[in-house]
Length: 437
Image (tube, rainbow, N blue to C red; front, top):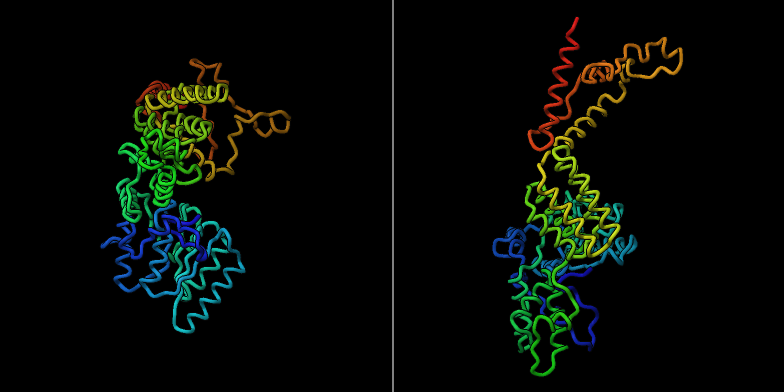
């Protein structure tokens, strides 16, 4: 995917898109990325020092990654080469590297801009390492995906990651004002429609200019669109997120943290945002089931029942009424007493299982289906709990070499307060019955 004000194709008589005509000519003209190219931005400081290393530009579409890479070549007098991981393979990389080596022999270095760098596989990413290390190229890679997950560690260790941000509404407004100045005419929309158009852009500068072009094309002489007419003309909804990218995980994280923080109103808000954005309700339902165990657990065992029921409710009824089951589950879990004791207990038990996984259970709790096993002591001395008062024998079930361990520590909230009382009672009985001569 190209970026805001991405490079245009071969010259032609075709009209140039508005985004291309508004392409910044200096880094200071780039909108919305002051933390990178502003007077005290990270990239500005690097250029001021006279030293520029390899970079990874990470951020949503339409935030200026390609533009900044092109302007960097001008700022540093580096030769600019651009490839896209979507259309390039090993042969293309070898050709670019060889050209850069020849250029370096003549005394000029190369800035190699790689769009969608995350689409290269691990082996292809490794091929950049030698030319980065010997200075043949200064790599600038652009990605819309989290580089921590999509790029290998060796490449990341040799590059500085710069996070491009979605444009704020004020940044989109600035682009629209520039477009109106360039066109010599105002957008034919009222104030409410202008706010809606800015929201529709969803922080994507290129998208905002494309929407503006659509409006100018559609408007008749003297016509001014209101909010409803605007949405009918451009056929686009206000902000959504890319379900395969970070927005998907950010809202899912916000939902879980709101539930963990016992804030049903915030939880319901993020749930509504996810559904409005087109998120798969089954994904939301599965997350709620997971939250019922991780965030509530034994403090309210009914939370898991409600969460599963909410998910099944959606499966049976479907959208939109089926979403009410997810809403009920969300509110129940958010309002329930919280405990991660079960979650922590399982993690600790798993760690112990990995450490002591070779130890056999004590023989007195093993079945003895054969005479040989009975002669070897299997099931010898096993106490049947139901034969004891309170149906509790107090015997030990851990491997002998491991000794007793405590993994589960109920909290003093909700139903776990009652569980705590039971465990304390059984602990007392175990001590009494094991202390008898």
